[in-house]
Amino acid sequence: MGLLIMLLLLSALGNGLLQGNASMIPLNASLTYIGNAFSISIYQVNSTNSSGYLIATQGEYQGDFVGVLRIGNATLIGTYSGVLVRSVFTGYFMPIASYESIRIPTVLALSNYTYFEATVQSKVPVYLRYLVFNVYGNGTLLNTLPLITVEASMPPLTIWFSNGYDCSEYRINATYGNPMQVVPIPVVINTQPPLTYFVSNVSIVGTSPQTELMLLEPGDVVVAESPVTAVNYTMYVCKEVIGYPGSEYGLLYAMEYLGPGGISIPSDISNNVFRVKYSGNDSMVVVNHVFSVLSSGKYSLVTYSVGPGNLFIAGKGSVIDFAAAAMAVLRNYGIPTRIALGFYGTNKDGLYFFNSAMGILWDESYVGDEWVMYMPIPSQVNSVLGPIPGNEISSVITGLILALPWIVGFLIYLLISKVKTR
View (cartoon, helix red, strand yellow):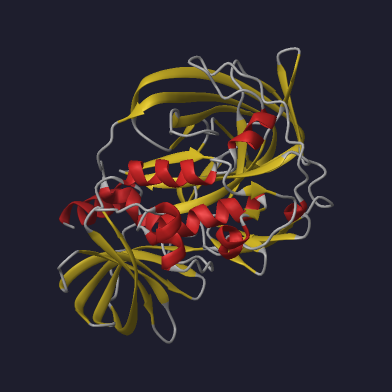
């Protein structure tokens, strides 16, 4: 864990966030084990007035552990110092940096998002990635995480999803019909297994009007200080990822996407459906297998939700059921997974046109320090979206015929921070 602590300290120093007289916070808190990845165990921490996450190397129960603690409206990044005994942590928390999060509740409904329109110039078909969710509840997807700004600058601003090779560069220009404060990110999604294309990074190289951009974590969401109507991007798509853990720093945010997420799928059903054993070293194999089972056509896509927990019993489900079921199953294997909402476009005369009725969901899993993106819905439905990208990713996305009733009345919480460092 020394590397992660050092990276946190260097990051804090580099951004001027270290507090000169940070005080230690005494804690006697309950621990809930929520998963593991890369030989690291993740625990949820809960006390009377605070909650957070603690990262511990497997087998270590005493010493210093990196984590996050939330008190009121403040998100603290720092180290836990103490002892883990059964389901209790006793010790102190030492803040390294403190952020104040501003929560903005938003209802995602067609009536509220009819304004979303975009025209995109691109040599490849792209989805416009918009929001990210971490839990499912009462038939909806929610983002309940306080987002903090990890980088704020004028363009260019780069969003990293993975590190790869055999990559191609694409320049993309988007014009939005209405000013956008949450800036969509163009990405390429795997719509049939196995995972073949990996978005390495997307850089926002220019906006109109010019404005400061904020990269929010967890979730890789970009917010503009002033709403923008046009954005220029550079996107790198790779055919291979490096395939081994790089910096453990990314796990600090990825760990937020472990745990049940409000979905209960009995282990006997999950084991019977997927029949895969996970040793902790072959995450890509597990993701590909879950992706393959859900997109195989064994389970049918319908226009009404049966609930992600009932998908395998009913043999059918909605888009939200498939996406949420994949998230739950992969989290059970200890693989951080989240759900993204985006928009697909239709092609006409070399331009892609997007609107609010073209919403779609996909999953993103954290594999070997890489976020990989895929759409775990039956492949025969994927064909409605057009041919799967070929060697040059040159296919056309023609549109989704199935209605998406889940989007009506969809409740999410977009928690945006303008970062006020204490």
